[in-house]
Length: 136
Image (cartoon, rainbow, N blue to C red; front, side, top):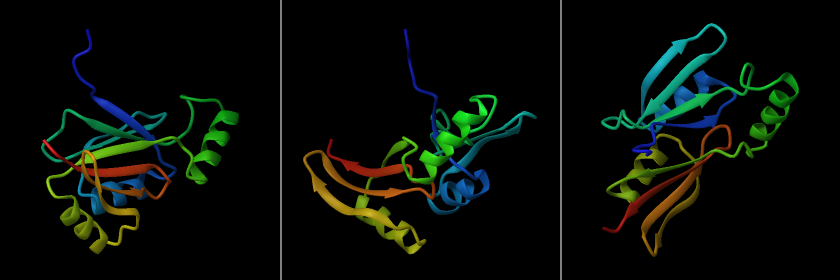
C-alpha cells in the first residue's frame, strides 16, 4: 500500500537558472544535488518539509531518445512542459507581496476562492505554480 509521495518532477532547460528561481526567489532549499555522470540529480524542497522533493529535470538521455528530447525541449520552451506545482502558505497575500518584491511576475493576483485564497505564477520554463492559503 502506498504511504506517501516523495518526489515530483518538472522539466527545466537550465538547472542553474532553476536553482536561482526555486532557491533564490521562492525560498526553497536544495535537498539533493548529485552528479551521476550521465545526468545531474537535482531536487529542491520547502524548508522543513524535506520528505517531499521536486526533481528539476533536464529533458535528456537516458530518460528519452534524442528526438523525444527535442520535442520535450520545444514544449518546455513554449511553456507547455506539463509541470504544475501547488504550494501552501498561511498568508497568501503576504507571500504574494514578498515574492513580487523579489521580482517574480504573477499570472494571477491573490483571489478569494471557495477553498481559500490563491495566486498563480510560472517558473522561467513555463511550469505553472499556484500558492494557496486554504480554509481549515
